[in-house]
Image 1 (cartoon, one colour):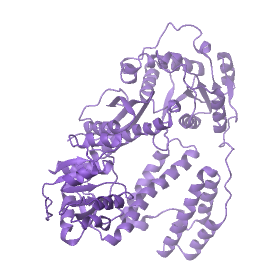
Image 2 (image 1 turned 180 degrees about the horizontal axis):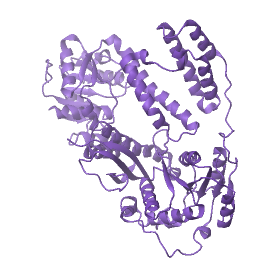
Image 3 (image 1 turned 135 degrees about the vertical axis):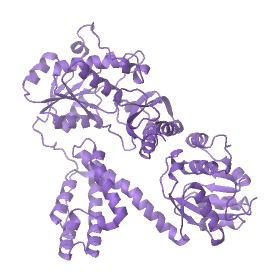
Image 4 (image 1 turned 180 degrees about the vertical axis):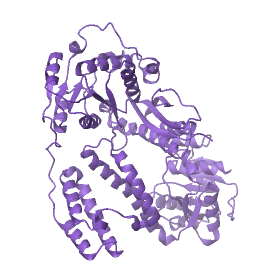
Length: 599
């Protein structure tokens, strides 16, 4: 067994916990010359991650790792750590001179005392970053601050380990660890809660892509706060605008109990901000008193909000089923006409398209039709969810829809179509390769509905990106004169793209399906960190392959318009597109990335 010195030397490392942190740190230590002698991996996801980041490293038990390793890396949940250390001490497993390192932000080295009593050398290092659990994290260690806690004689060892990883060691006393970790959690975790609340309010107000509205403002605010602290604060509180604060609270309350937590958060943070602004001399005592009085006033939050947002359109849409009924309804709607095409089983993603259509036209038409020509043999045409009454109820509550066109097959295809749309070579790749004839059927029905409705603008979702690109090509090549508008993909809270096919998923599959979004997000993060196309694809594939229950069909990085693969040295926009099966359900998703050239 090695003894510690100021330089760790080449050590045999054992990783206890192949989560996002452990597998990455083990891989990083391996890359600088240490030998990883074993890793624990209980779940299928952790085994996949260990295989991806620590190939050829054996999966061992905790006791086997402690027996074989000179440096034991404990990357387990905070609540597990004390009992794990104490339990191994009770079994007499810790060894004299063995380096014992944990990565918990909450604890210092006291939690490792049972091992220290048996001769182990306790070290605590905590990287101030989030982990994706992919090789991308290793490059992000460069310059990253690591909180380091250790006894003075071995503190240089902990610092040297951090420096080897490329990080910046920052010495933190044992007594300061809880407050340090609370500050990081408060800043990072609660920032996510705050931003998510703002997105929910914007979505409830009818904005189709809340993130796009918030991104420039929040980026500037975060930068200002990091540079100047509270001196960067702006807004109604520091202006002393008690009337604006009052209006904000009442507007939030009017959205109903769905945003009760937002009202409470706004009140509390506005109160804290007011008192901080007063203490720093940013506002006067009378102004602060007026705001605090407003914050103390009770405000009624309705159980639910039944009234639709203001609209010139009738509350209940006219439902038509035949071509003749459609033409009669359209004749009563002069002005700019917006169309939203759907296959029913409507959800929030469809409603986002409706809102975009409302903003672009004087009148909105929604078509609901399950098109048989875009389903191949053995696909789910017969089982595709159909509930027109539920769809109409949803559109009625949303408001602003003038006409719903819900034809049967005989109205759309009164006879077998002899003239067919050829969608061209793009339709034979990706979805088209998996589903031959699919896009020919899509463009066939789009052309027919365009001819029947004669819209000025048609709104489609970005989730079906290949379909969107082909419809744009159709309109351009055939001079159809319809403006095509795209709406960003609407997602569930865990990132899963909203889709009518999500209803096929079991509860277990539903949780697994969120791994598709995590993979795309990891790829987008790699792109934003300056990685080129090969690295972005690799990172995305690593996360997707490590996700449990997801059977990949394809994963590509393509030109958003041509859907041709991107060159390795491409810079500019690209589209990460994925298709996969979760259980028996096939799901697709995509994300736009901005690529830097490879070096």
